[in-house]
Length: 168
Image (cartoon, rainbow, N blue to C red; front, side, top):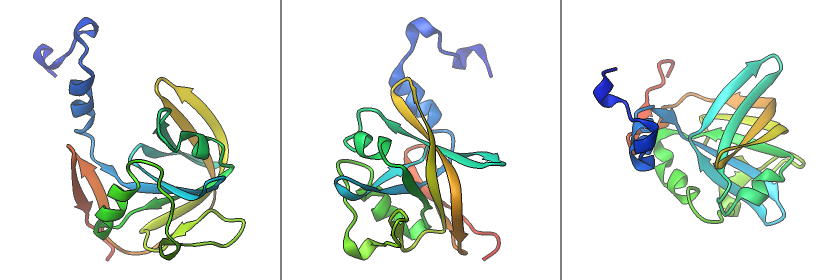
C-alpha cells in the first residue's frame, strides 16, 4: 500500500475506518437464541471459524446493542448462514429487539431456535465471552451442524451480494 492510503493515529476517522473494513466481503448470518424475552435473532457479519479441534466459532456484537444482555447471557445459540433470497430477514434482524415470529423458526427443546431456510446452520454452546473494545466476542463450541445447497447472501461495501454455490 502507498503511504497516501495510510491514516496516522492522530487523524483517525472512525467513519473512514468503517468504510475501509467494508472492503472485506463477508457472509451474512442470523444468530438465534432462547432468551428471557423469548426467541430472539440478530444479524451479524462478524463471524468466523476459530478451531477444528475442538470445533469453535466466534461472532461479535456491539455492547450497546438492544440485544446485548439477552445474547450475552445465552448458554446456547445457533448461527444461520443466510441464502441470497433472505435479504429481508437480514434487514429485519439488524436493528432493535427482534423477536422471532412463530412461522420463522422451529424448536427442538432444548435446542436454540432454528431458522427454516438457512444454507448452513451451526448449533453451539457458549464456550467463552470476551469484551474487546466496543464489542462482545462470543465463542461457541459447535455441537451440531447441517447444510444444504444454495447461493449465500454476502455483504460488501455496504451492499448485499451473493456467493454462488459451486456445488449446486
